[in-house]
Length: 219
Length: 201
Image (cartoon, rainbow over all chains, first blue to last red):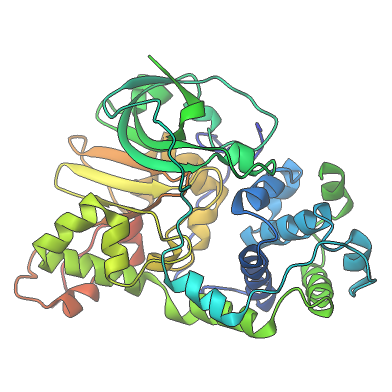
């Protein structure tokens, strides 16, 4: 979707502010919303692309004003309500009203430890032929889907070069719509800075981004 | 979904988190010990010191460095540092000719298992907006003024690959152990918004 999250290349977003010796979390509620989200993700209630997609539907003014973990709170709450795990009335009440239907075993401590400290492949273990080879010139599609996608606006309709084939991964566009079994090759694709930003950009510089088969056509 | 966004303005956030937490706990959807384990892991166990060990090893072990740049996932796993948001790893080497910089314009993807959770500035909209369009201007704000003859490569981590930069080893560090070298490497150098300074004194 052409949402506020797709912010690469925008101007006047505000100054870059950096905090010296920043703590990992600033507030207790940030710790909690982070851990809740990881625990519910690990238990299997949703995929990462579903929560990303939910956050992308925040009203744009709220998105720009929200801190990072405020976005997580919004995403987790809205997604759990959408999936009927809990209800809006329960959140308003601050306790269970016996509503909501979806139930999975909670993520045990040992399982959390495992996924945090062992390889957890996100790739798809299926044999899908690649549409492109390293060295191929491509043109990204000018698509404007109203659902979640990982093809940002700034890189649509641009000419690039396939640099590396990373293998097969679930297509985020499909995952966010509940179809986790559509998988395609993902490639590292190089674009010259001038192709993306015009002749004011440095002739030497380039941008690399990871693109699925569905995002491109051969040039 | 959109209507809900308008219905729940972002006010009184602590109350709202407390309310959500109570609902999840009463229903038995999350395990208290799991939450503590997750928080402790990201607050105390992983962080830039992990990535610094990878960098220092690459600086002192040419065969490991070759493996790291060829197959980052395998090399990071070999050191025992693979994990959630750090399984599919790509490591890019800064050289006298090429400077690499990492961003995630669409959200805030970051190699958690090697660098810990990202700093607020990395997740901020100004960083995400500017890193792809004006990396040189952005880097100047970080105190890094790159000459025109250096090529800048920006990596927008929009899929499941997580990117980490292998910075250049600073001058004057011959003979130092990997442990000593790791102490010189800070987070920003592994994102690409800084270089590693020579040791002082």
